[in-house]
Length: 399
Image 1 (tube, helix red, strand yellow):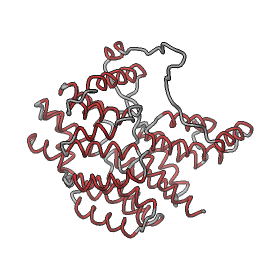
Image 2 (cartoon, rainbow, N blue to C red):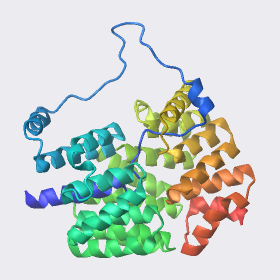
Image 3 (cartoon, rainbow, N blue to C red):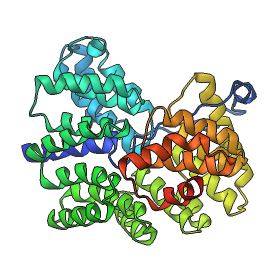
Image 4 (tube, rainbow, N blue to C red):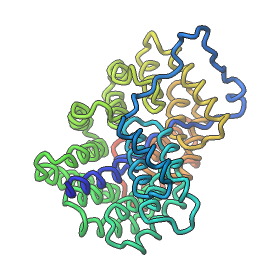
């Protein structure tokens, strides 16, 4: 049982913060005029369904009651918060991040909270793109617990997203001494691929997955392997890998979104739209369905586009600035506003620097005919020796 718990902890750390991609949050940024255009919804009948929520787990209800009776039980608060972070990742529902933070509120603002709280605080911070705060908490935690594999793993993710690759490698080296081989290889492979060795990274990770012999972490690592296939321009292989993961875990919203992107690259927008149908409550899947339905000239294209505009406006009214990458994708593909998409993509690049961020930045700059705007991506790509098939299609013209 102890080994199983450790394995789940590793999966939580990597899945929740995303070496395979940052945690999807339902937040977008838009101009004030969009917020003004948002239309509130008022149900006409008492029987109208406004939202559906999952059934409460009786055991969780009991544990929350125990925490209410004994609010100092940090181990119980940590367990409940960790479960909510896992739900946030699986369901791409940021409300669970808020629940996790509320559960930890007794310790949240402490300069020196208990180590387990420090780790979860950093996980939530990075999920909300508060990368500097997350990095500070992780550095503090590692100073306290240098043998904490999960802390090193999360630090590797944060360092990668912020393009601090030496720090990310340092953390992956620590993970290699503390975690199972599949985790260590999956930590290092994206860094090797970013450094121009995507083929070698793919082969090494594929071997590690084969050697894992059905370990649950091997399935998780398969999504990372699919992303390496995408980087190499092998979308058919990526499709097969992602379909394998989704077949085992249909609730994995991140993998579903990645597969939708691959289907679009394979010029099958109708299949991408069908894949995301029924998941429109998840903004990250709604935006992809809206783009796919628009590209396929589907019957729901206008309705889905309006849904996206409404959610963008609502998020702008809240002042959220978390998910600019997907808004840039939508504005470029559906609204056809390359200049607005470029503004969003640049603002997103100022915060995080993953391959997906570079791709939309370069694509928007190409569509806008603004080579100078893409200088940060060109410099980043050149400095790190990045080789990415999708990115190269745009950077080639910009060079």
